[in-house]
Amino acid sequence: RKMGASRCAAFSQLSTASARLSSVRIRAVGQPRLVAGGRPGRASITQRVAGCSRVVKVASSATYFDGVLQGNENYHDAHAKNVQPLNDQNCGMYLTRGAWAIKAKEAKTILLEGVMEFQNTTKANEIFVTEVETDTALLSNGPVSEYTVRTFVEPMHPDPEDEFRARPDGYWPGYVVVAGATTKMKVYVEIRGQDLKIRDELQALWLKVKYMTYGPHGRVQKSQHVILPLKEPEPLKEPLQWKEASSEYVQKSTTLKRLALPTHLLSTVDDPVEVVKKYALPYSQPGDIVTIGETPLTAMQGRWRHPETVRPGWLARLACKLFKPTSSVATSCGMQALIDLVGPLRIVFALFMGVICKLFRKPGMFYRFAGYEANLIDDLTGCIPPYDKFIMPGPAEPEAVVARVKAETGLECAIVDVNDKSHYLGMVIVASTDPTLDDTIKDALVDNPTGNAIEQTPLVLIRP
Image 1 (cartoon, rainbow, N blue to C red):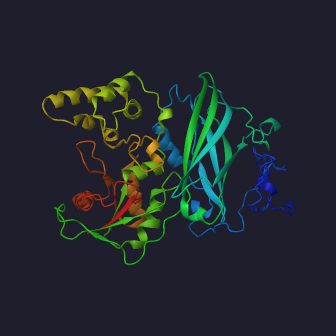
Image 2 (image 1 turned 60 degrees about the horizontal axis):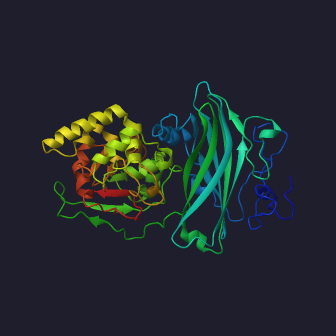
Image 3 (image 1 turned 135 degrees about the vertical axis):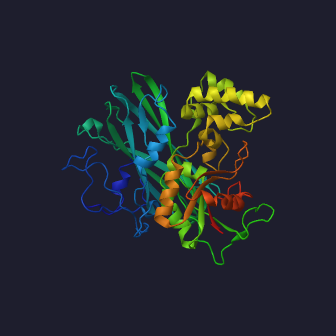
């Protein structure tokens, strides 16, 4: 299919007639993309967005930044569902964060593309998806007023009927997802700026998707949030800034060096093993240890949860009042998020034992009896933006993560919570490949070389 003189006709149909994206040059590759239902023989309202004159070239190890869809739904969204139990508030419909890629990156334009999936997890109920709306927020090192962001949602239903196909005006036709079934949608995001600063200033995009569900549960609005990094850090310059461990803290080790490694803003488009390969492996040597922050790992697993998805019950409202204001469970939403993870019975038992132990001057025992999740959960403002707007539980299956890192990189690995001062454990080694190295890791990290603010250095390379 010929694109015509403007070479922008494919993507311009994604917007209203008055909103032509004349600055983006798009070309068609191969056959026209099929209709949303996959039936051959008829092109949909769009052609495949394949890139532009300055699209990033795909390297041998393709990544999200290379324009390849990234986001393993079996890995990330399986963990994400574990923090949002399917109760009345969730009604059985779940929207994945999906797979995303930067499809074009020019001097004045960035084009993102993602595929998200609606999953009806009920066994007997049909659930309608009647409305879908999107909103965005840019994270930048400078003012964002000069940038414009436009989104378009394209249904990708498996039904061939015309009434369910994508419309050029962006209208979302109501759709029924039968019990146990799924349906998908493609989301396009275009960011336009004035000059080359778009590459230097913009750090990430926060996409908020609100969708209305309708069925036996009533009419309930739900939401999903996707964080998409837009900028990679500059490579470290030689000589590397290794830091000697302070003698004030070192107890077990004689010589110890640490190298904090900056990364892009980690999210569900990232895999922890690939992040280690990209940012730590080039600077490592045999015998080194790499540590990963537990909160960045939670971000990559997609386990963060917006408070609007939390419905505090009476237990959460009462229990949160027993804690100091600095605790992550001192709010009803923070406590309810913990209850959803470990169950109300365990929380009641932990509260009872915590009160008894406190009478005998043993504070902080609630966290021990409540378990792993209580020790690591972070409430709002506990992380760097935009995760400061989310409740961040601890990571899932940390032992499996460190085992994968060692198997694929050869480096000893540990998941750590360094900056946690809200409970009795202080610094926590969540998981490690070699427990005999735990004292060395504590010596190296006890003074928190990664910082506590916006350093964005979730990886630390330790050289004993």
